[in-house]
Length: 199
Image 1 (cartoon, one colour):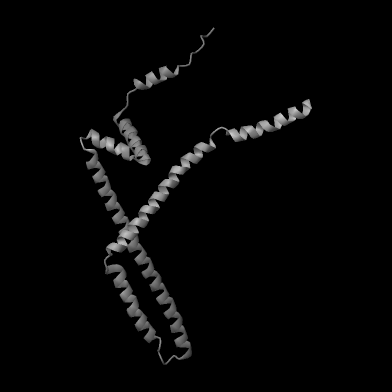
Image 2: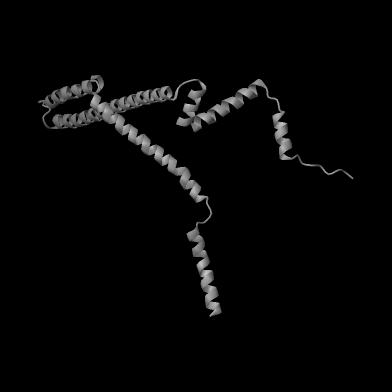
């Protein structure tokens, strides 16, 4: 009769994994995947301070560096948003200019083909469009506009982080057992049934 085959225990499996050997390609693949997952999770501020302490950096130095990097990121994001908004407005202005003058040209050609009065609004509005383009693409960004955009961008980031923080809490609450109120509501009908039976 054949001997019954014994399944390995979890501690044996762990011990076997500890004794496993990996090739260079496997090591690179494992490390790359671990780094990718760590980058997805991100690094908390406390972890950043701990990394700085391991490197011999003071807490104040890390705090100042983090504040400076954050300020640079906010400035770049605010500048990009302002320039993008200017380009969108200029594009909308150009489309409106083309659409209106196409209609005016059609009206001019059908009503008074010999008198090209459409050139007057075309010239005047064209100058305004050129001025708008110069303003949108070449004019600098004032400090006040940059500060307003940075505050707005910072508020949006804080609101987004608060929303992401509430999602795990709601997921955890969905996975909890029924609360005391729900349990009491489930017990009350049984109590009333027993009372009516005894009565």
